[in-house]
Length: 464
Image (tube, rainbow, N blue to C red; front, side, top):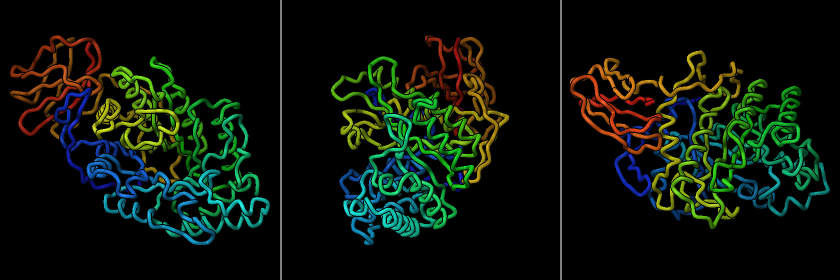
């Protein structure tokens, strides 16, 4: 990351499957603190209810405790910032930027050129190319200039590719009035105003493959052209609005496909950011505990891309709580990591545990994520079921597993707790002899925490 953020949070209690208990791991470990240890950004939007003061106080407390990057749901879009020609409204955007500064958070700007949420007055110039170019340039110069140095990255162009076939979206005032050249111009103008900001192209359905017939395949060819022509683009934002269309293991969209896109972008020295993630279920169906566990697994698989691909640095969720989500408009439900009561769901636990157990490949270093970040050697996903870093500065405290026997060194009397990968306790005991039998635990991968006085160690083990 470009900057290290100050952790200002408090420990939150976890409520898993209706059973409330203290947080499984160390009290100071949040999604935010663990993301910063792993040199990535993890975030969520501030939705429109937050801007109008309609949310309970613990919503904001959760947001600033758990996340280190923020974006406005609607408040920096064209219709919000220039509702009438030449008259700009920065009030809500300034409110969010101030909030981010007070809490050490990175700010994304969303979005400068988009076919939707364009104020009606812009359409008055639909048949006047030169006037439309001036309108777009003036908007970018004013909006980007107002937040220069405060907004670290912009979605310069949003959803410009058709969803039906690989071609530019024709139902856009910018495309109809200017043509595809508006895209190149928007990037050039934005960079001229703020040369230090990262500039992204942002779109949905990019997780559905990179073949020439897929949206991501079409986009890759455009990125190659932009890079070749010196257009200042630094990143691609994958919205990643994923739907679980059944109650089995089928999702529309694939983490593997998005990973493939990240690898292709790395060859072009372009970053991949997950910018609007949610994983919803069809409205009206009964969502079971098993479904929520599968949802958590998919959240974790998308996180793996950001953790493991050197040119990926951002994992941003399009909301915090299921109660305040845009997904109802898409006939979807329960797509976020907190439930209606702002209690963490299995998806939250999956993300937390993955951040706690991630071990960077030994031959690759995740470097600071600047817009000039060079392409690094692709790394394949490694099996980390045994070798996991130790989260303790006390090197003398260590553990290893052999069969079902846990061997502990560096402690006289250690408290031992074992949790499954959803953070649920499955075993606890005390080790006084240096070895402890983990009885009654099924085969699988688990998290173990051992503690003696103020010293603790967390490690992942595999029981076979």
